Length: 625
Figure (cartoon, rainbow, N blue to C red):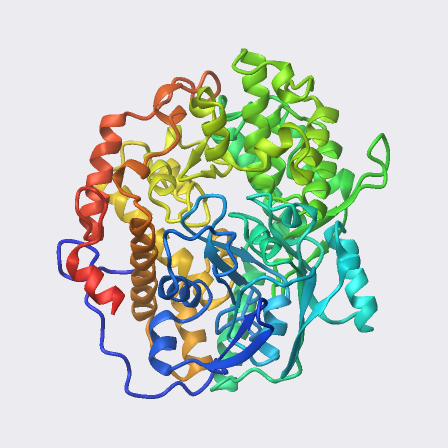
């Protein structure tokens, strides 16, 4: 467990960096591409920069900070998008296939990053680059072709309007290589839907915060990579020893086989039984028909295969096929828990085949399933409660479980047609258009809430509220621990729990690995320091790595402060305080606003921020230097 410094808060003293140089893990090169001027250059990365920001989200946050202009539209050509895999990505390490996409989000207007698994980042590393930065706007719809040292911008107007998988096939055919790796955007990215994602490996998505829209604003349909270099590993024998033990430990875990069978869909029953499943637009915490949309239904009626990211024995992704009924022939890699719940129970849908169809549409059109499910759920509630009239939603008969209307609305959003054009702007702008919608849209800082009801866990509410990107569980998933320990577990411990999660989980994004072996199979976090040491030759301990992650969290906070964010922006959605859970095991539960104010004060104090959530002058001086 990470231990803070002796001070009264989490502003930890930074240990002096090891005197040894970096001996592996990095090519120490960043590819910089200006689409407007067709200028492509390779820039060196210093040891000091690398040791301080590690990689992945860390590299991205620093580059965004260095090029920050708070008056600039996220869709302007000058807004950079940074793509960085991290030093463990592509190495013989369990689940080492994660890549971060970092920019100022067009959805929230503040710092944003999104994470994608698969093998795209591995190929980028094998091409010899630790990061890719893209600025400018291509004069024609194009893709970026990175073939080791040869890099060029390739116009391809024939890609216009193509869905993700079709675009991928067209590019592979043009290049003549089925084994290249690429990420693409769909029609939603081209249309600048503010929560458009980036797709790769048929089902891997950097789905949140509009990274696909950023690429669309740059007239970039895809990034294509072919690499042939060996990754620089300092001590291959040591890495082999540590990783072999890790793989064996994972395979012996009592839940390993079950995890392979169901992946994240195994979470559905747990969340429903705990009473924290998003149901009917987060009004309820459990779904009476959950057995029809759980992992067992998926496994026994629809699953036809497994899929895994690079070097991952968990193979948590499911390939599903609808074999009968009106959605027959639908095939999709997925769904995982968030998608299944946000496009299922949250919309009153109990037909798993419909969930698969909705998942397929979102993936192929290139939009975030969580935000899509949140916005459609809010629209259904608005129409059913009379907040909006049917004429304001294109005459659609929006109601709970209305499958055809839900699928139609997904396409309207992706193509910006009718009311879909309003929803494509995201929650904040929907609320600007219809202020009466504010109480029923579950969002923080403009990002729609992940699929866990925070009314029963104040630590989860705090995690949503203080997240640097908005209400996303990827920053801190504390609800299971709080439910285990009990609601009366002290506020101090809950604040500590949130801060620890907000430090260890983003560290995985910096290293380029998936956090699921740690979350689901109880993987020892100290092992990640052993990987880092073996790969890089740098003797960072876990404490050292956590301090780097802690500093990056302060850096992203400072970016958001520059945009005017403060305490007023660190609250969970209104429903968390105002609407008790109506039924189920958590019936009557609602958070106390007074208690939340207390834990927010505690959190700020531990972070070393003032009462308005502004990092101290000492922190700002250290981080900005």
